[in-house]
Length: 202
Image (cartoon, rainbow, N blue to C red):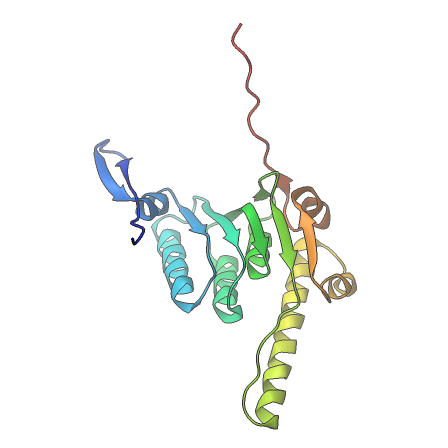
């Protein structure tokens, strides 16, 4: 049986009237983008269009990106990254659960001071990989392009984390993982969210 998107009650701003919206539409109206699956070209297009629209509507309010997933195709993910960097709207990021490869890269790319994770979140980044096809020249060109993208990603990781580029190259030459607290220490994020303290009734 196909999973149907839940509908939730949503109170419109200003008028104060209630209406039923699908969950994703309600989140978008609150300037929340949830990325919870592998990012391909189609999914990236939806995210890009939403980001650009919200930036046009009101660029003074933060856009909140919640991330959980195992990354995705390099080019669509880089399109999201480049758009995040070019928006007038500040983009805050929150890692929920697990962020691997390009999902971790996007979590790191939020507005400095507004990058967070839940306490049990995990991050992992592996060296970029691809599959080459065609003749020798084609394979060589694809390999050169992959190395160019790798060097660009590592340079951006260095910029966002404050880690020396040489250290980033060494650390990410193989799969590297971080806990939420370790991600703060490395500079991937800025803080770990803590649940509100509940004060018992007297």
